[in-house]
Length: 425
Ligand SMILES: [Mn+2]
Image 1 (cartoon, rainbow, N blue to C red):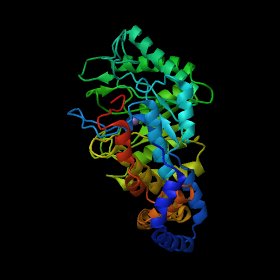
Image 2 (image 1 turned 90 degrees about the vertical axis):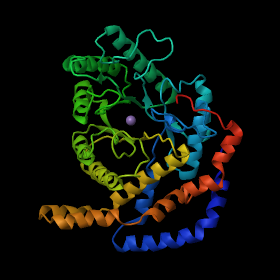
Image 3 (image 1 turned 45 degrees about the vertical axis):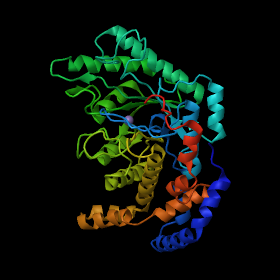
Image 4 (image 1 turned 180 degrees about the vertical axis):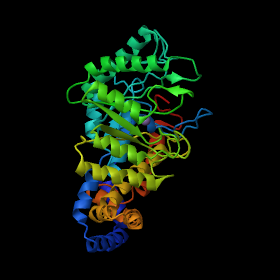
């Protein structure tokens, strides 16, 4: 299935009168406050967020998985789904592949089907958190950190293959997330595990092309419950610094202990020029992988506020923007549309912050005044601005409404059947 511009424009026609009214009202009040609406729109249009290939099928929990219908069973079908999302929101022009779940068999066919729907390839993700069929050594007790050199070598080799696959597709980054750690005190040497990880990453780093980034993701716990080798941003930052200028820290919003101040981590990493990118999601308790902005939208806004400041005040290189959410109840494509909307809305709100007044308030320690400035931006309803940005790019005024009235899921079920299961899940 492929959505055409005509289909989307026809769909927009029924909403355009109401949309224009609310957009014009908002634009006028934004301009009165000194904002440049055209500039806001072009910044919003430019922000593109990569879709992870593993989020296009219904996610599961360790208690079970309830598949939806019409899930993409092949990589080409996953790319078609990202194409549909991009047609609707004009904001998701790349897919982030998970290897070995999505190893292309025919690279040209994959590249052709991607360019047909305007999709590129963002970071490639390696997987050493599970064993593949006929694997010579097991990752049960760790991969890059394993005390057994043969296991480490296998995991390093896998990462090098992932880089090769990424190069053939035009990716520019490798994301490494390790499940390595221990579930009981005394299970392994904390210092040796870190040192082995460092040495293994050094081997992988040698193969990172000059114009690539190595993104090191961290996570405090799960699947291991006593220690994780790369447990926090500090450990990731330390490794990235030791490795060199192509290595960066990747922040996955769900990979923090409850109440961690993520915006402060973002600020610190940008100051050091070591923020590499994001895995966006939301959570209430742990790594819940919920829809972005569904639980803590103010936190997301505060993160974007630091990002917007960081873009203008630091030399941090451009970021990789990716979603890493996977849900077990919603239609995965609707879930992804909601996530992209939430990210762009937070970005728009952050762009609205009156940074000069905020700085002035900070200078004179006007605490209440500073809060007013932030919350004034956060509480402005910018949905018509976002809708206008997407409409002008050729997307839908309301992508979820578009998804439903253009009967995307129904068509996919007709094409692929009710029982197709996304590869890798
Ligand atoms: Mn992640």
